[in-house]
Image (cartoon, rainbow, N blue to C red; front, side, top):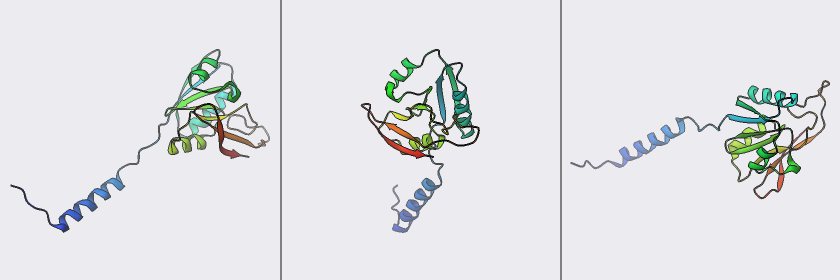
Length: 154
């Protein structure tokens, strides 16, 4: 036997569904970060500590050379730094700030990932004893190898 629902019952049910959806836990961005670094790099370890401090679950793979990892993840040599990481299907090359990585994971742009080319003073893991650092940029690596500025720091 089918019981017809009143308009009021339908509206109440719809409001309940909306409330349930609004109260459901938000889909959290991935936090597992796989880092590729050389065994002797101290600034890489400092960056890993920065990412752990920001809540990322870090797994480290030490390799004697990272060129093949960068190539496999679409990072051109011109954008290389001292370590490469992978999180949520994106690559993080170099001293990318945790906040930039979180923004990348939240926005999910059509891109390879982020890079902070080189090793700029003041970037996470590259802090100077006097706390000073120059300005630097985090670049979005586009599919096809191009870049655009994702964030400016300092």
